[in-house]
Image (cartoon, rainbow, N blue to C red; front, side, top):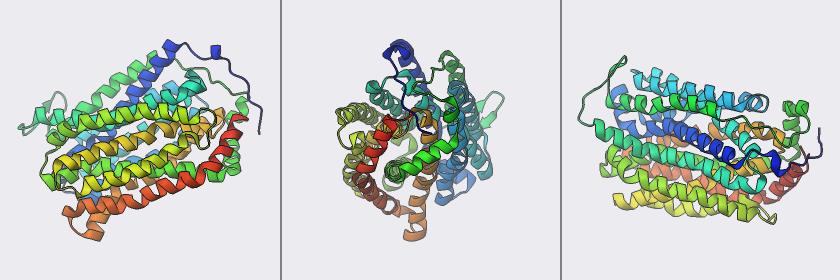
Length: 445
């Protein structure tokens, strides 16, 4: 069912102070989600040693254990986002994933850790669809690029910050055979790290009660809003736009997870760098470069969109593809830790360019009432292919094709090269379908 869009006046949006307060809270919640999600990557060695598991099993923990239920719950959660109070849904999700992160620290077997990581994925599946749905109800169109850019900062700061924060925790706990927690008993250092990073999320869940649920703007028919058929019909009208847009950003996310999951382990094997040293030396520069890129992509994306320029902010993925070629080579083939670290830091920069634009581009090709379903549907494919396969494929390439753990760098090259190529091809071919879908969305609610 297609209807003409109801105009939304500037006064319909919440006050600027309320909007930026909500943005800050959502960004910090997202930061904690990425912190809890990626801290595992910093303690690969101790977990493999204590639980007696392989790189491939670790790749499953880093990828599919997190994403399998994330993807299964993404579509129904998108429908819930479009129909219920989004803030309360996020509070439930944060409480769940924080508790599961703490349980990760209590795991004494591969199976327990696998189940805990599944729980983290289920909890985190609520956050982004709800956040992405709420922000357009807080900010008018000409401010959304910057708002999404700020939100995307959380992914970078959370990911890179997990290395820095984790490095500080590991450094502080280094030398202790076990760490004693009241009620929990004696834990190994890697287990204590999970417990420490999981606790702030329980506090964040309480703080979210101070964020008000905004009025949904630009929706003229509540019944049509709740119908999943309307979204499927809309996708059927623009199949190429969704294939190219979802495909491009899935490739960028996939490559990002290849590097995030195995970058610390690569440098540990190539240069003997400990997890704490990696976090201290690479975490902060990566976070700063990621922050700069996220803020830059919001500004650049808004400039690209101004005047309805062809392709708009979707063209940022082409920049990413060209930038990632030297990044991958520098990271994996350097004989110096310094140069390899530089490659990793600039990889964070180029990957961050796409994070902020992804959310905004997704919203531009769908009417307002479909934001939750559009975001969660993309998350379904993105999580399965990118978050799931990004950590797993380099491990498989290293163990099954190259047959040598010391060849991890070449495993990363084999895993990421096809995705970088597709990350260029998809936006190049998809500009026309993207423009047609964007025009249709602007004329439809």
